[in-house]
Image 1 (cartoon, one colour):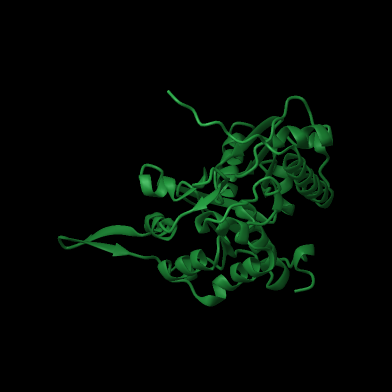
Image 2 (tube, one colour):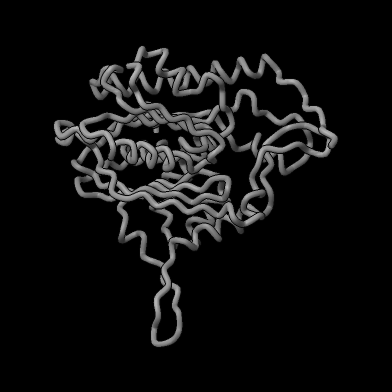
Length: 319
């Protein structure tokens, strides 16, 4: 059996990626804990996710070390899970909280691109250079009864759809080598059709007489706010069209894409920050966090606002 030798890892690129990782994660965690008045020793669970960069020690270990967290903390580090991994991280945190009463979970979603730049000339690989950007967000989840009065949202539902059994869906977005042996992120033309196939999981079959009928819910009535993953204008347009969404519901996602690019799994949190800063959230409002990622995976979470608020986020303070 013959094996192709792989190009050596560029130490300088690795250093860039590690510097990005520490800047994004440490800053996000520090600001969040200060805002929530939570000491690092009070965090019982930590879940990190990043698609393109998977260091050793893990990202969760880096955070635990930097903030001196407890040795009995439960840590999870998700890698290679695609742009919809923020919801996967929430699901992991939720499951951990169900087995640990009176606990606090820290969820970190990020994308690190310092060692992921493609240096070749093939278009399917160059797209990633154009749209992906560094980004990160942190969130705290709690099942401590005393935290309920100050909670912003209640996590109601998580739905995960995985199209990985389909070869086209599995291969349309992947890390690979071009014809010249240069590594990069391959984004194929089949992505859009695979995304559409994944979105079909949001429709329901029922029988009218003897004939099956496809039913698309009116998502604009169901949800007051929609935080769609900013995978690119084509992806946002597909979400808007296939889910019957209005420009009003989609505008925060388009604004986020224009301002920050595709920050991968962190992007839905950037969209939520846009909504909280510029529109505000009323008690009882429902928020749909919807993301599509490699695999293809279509994941979504539904939140309900526990109070009314307008939170200014630094990323959107100048519009």
